[in-house]
Length: 142
Image 1 (cartoon, rainbow, N blue to C red):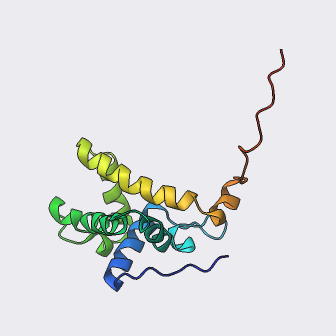
Image 2 (spheres, one colour):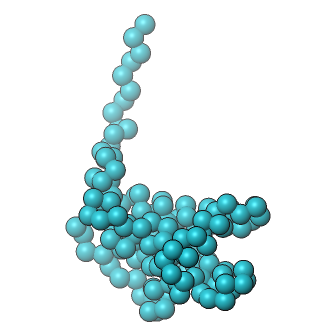
Image 3 (spheres, rainbow, N blue to C red):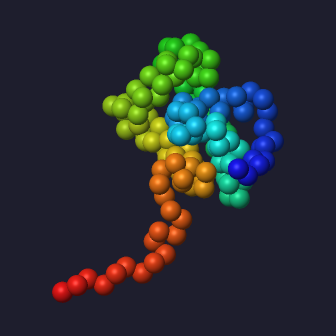
C-alpha cells in the first residue's frame, strides 16, 4: 500500500475530521476498509488543496458539523459523543425535515464518499476493475 502523506493540520482538527470520516465510513475489518484504514482525511485534504480555498473551506465546514450538536441541545461537540450517538445524530440530519440541513449533510457525505471510492485500495474490495469502461461497447446484434 502507498505511504500516505500526513496533512499539516492541528491535532484537534485531525481528531475531529477523523471521527467524522470514521462515523460516515466505518471500518468493518480487513475485507471492508473504512476511512481510517486508508487515511481518507489526508487524501481529501491533499486533493482539496488543488482548489483555491478548497482545503480551508472543507476544514471550516467540518468544524461547523463538530459544533452542530450544541445548537440541537446536545451540549457536546460531535467528536465527543459516543460512536452510537454520533451515528444517530448524523442519521437524523440525513433524514431531517429541513431541506438545508439534509442537503448540508448530503454534501458532507458526498465529499467523504467520493474521496473514499476514488482510491485504488478500495477498488479491489468492491470488485471494480480499472478501465472497465475503456473498451468500446460491443455492437448490438440485429
